[in-house]
Image (cartoon, rainbow over all chains, first blue to last red; front, side):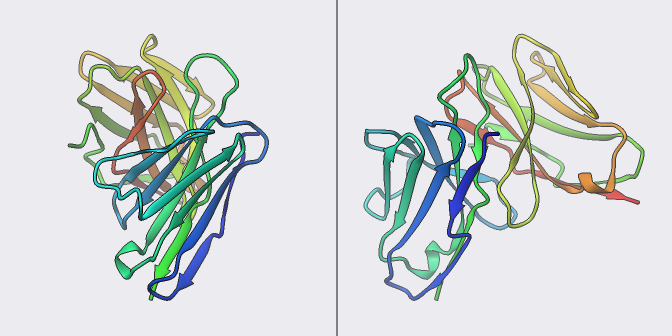
Length: 118
Length: 111
């Protein structure tokens, strides 16, 4: 159980293109999903917290207009990198926190999206 | 400011021996701690967790120890197996909201 699917797994595109990444919780509902970015040999950096039916909360230094997040249902959140440039190339990972259960719950991660901007 | 730190970027252990991965944190409000395992080009996989009301949690070959006074937790893997070779991240949160991750420790289990 607790499977998170992230799609696509790898994207290569030209500079200026907008790229949409989907994050789906397959067997559970997630009121809250998270978007992370990982640079080589570094930790996961939280970009934003996505809440179903409301606006995402962005971390300091993350451009809202650059990284558009939509969490339209309890099983789907999307991250759109608008007008992507080479410096946006990175590994993006989403996670979902189950709505069910009491107390603390682990986040469950997708397999990530490797974004390469030429 | 890194609130969760893993000071050892890598660790090598012989198969069958114990692997001990360490993690330190600075925020005394953290009350929930987790370990994740990550293979290259994959997302982290949840391994084991512990809440601040406990000092030990065990699941098969994996045991997590929490020392609140020292703000330190560790993951013990006994016995270590080659398939355990991966990057291990510790994470912490206050009241289960935002998770803060360490920088990871790359474990290599030598056959």
